[in-house]
Figure 1 (spheres, rainbow, N blue to C red):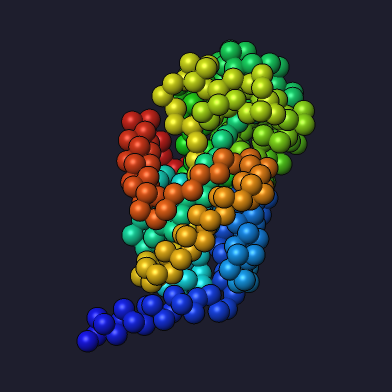
Figure 2 (cartoon, rainbow, N blue to C red):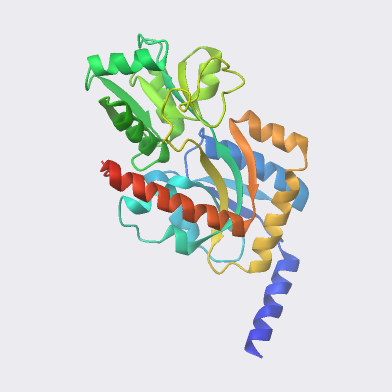
Length: 311
C-alpha cells in the first residue's frame, strides 16, 4: 500500500508540474558559456512549458558552490542545476567536497558540447602554435594564463597542454570565465583556453592559435585544431547539462527531458545555442549518465598521470 501511494503521489506531482517558478542555478558567474546556455534554455522552456524560470548565478569553487546548493535543495523539480563537467569529472579528483556531485545530483539532459580555443593576447609575438611554443620555451615562467578557477576543466586542459608541449606558463585563476576573459583582454595574462575567447578572436581582439574541438571554427577557418597540430591525445570538448537533486520524482525528470528533447527540432533554438559558442548535443538521462561515468574515469586518469593538484 505504501509503495502504491508513493507512486500515485509521484504521478500526481508530475501531472501538476510546474505550477510555480523554477529556480535554475547556474554554477558559474554571469558572462560565461554556461550562463549563456542557461539563458537560451530557460527562454525556450518558458515558451514550451509556460513556467517561470529564474536564472540564478551561484558561481565559485569551480561550480561546486552552486552545485552544492542544488544537491541540498528539496527534490521537487523546482530547483535545477545548469552545470559543466568540471563539477562532476574534475573537482572530485582534486579535493574533498561536502557533497558528492555524482551521487547527490541526477542528470536530466545534456544540452551542448563546448568547443574551446587557445587564444593569446596580441602582445604575444606568435602567429601560430609552433611560434607560441618556441616563445614560451624561450621565456619560461614569464607568461601567464587565465582560467575560470582552480579545478575548472579549462585549467586541467591547459595543464595537460603545458605538459605535452613542454612549456612553463603560470596559472592565474579567476572567479569565472567572464573575469578570466577580461584578464586576457587587458593583457594581465597572455593566454587562455576557453569557449568565451572565440568571439573575441573572431573580432580580432585576440589571436586564436588552436581549436580544442573536432573541427575548425567557421569564423576562424585558418586556425587549426589541436589534433592538426599534433596533440592527438588531448580530450577537447567540454559540455553543459541540466541536473536535479537526487530523489526528484522520475516522472518529473522524464518530463523535463522530453521537453528539452523537443527543442532540438526547432532550428531557432539550435541557432541560438550555436550563437553562444557551443555545439547543440542532447542526451537523455540514461545516455548522459553513461557519458558522465566515462568522463569521470578519463579525467581521473589524466589528473593522476599528469600529477595535477589543486593550487
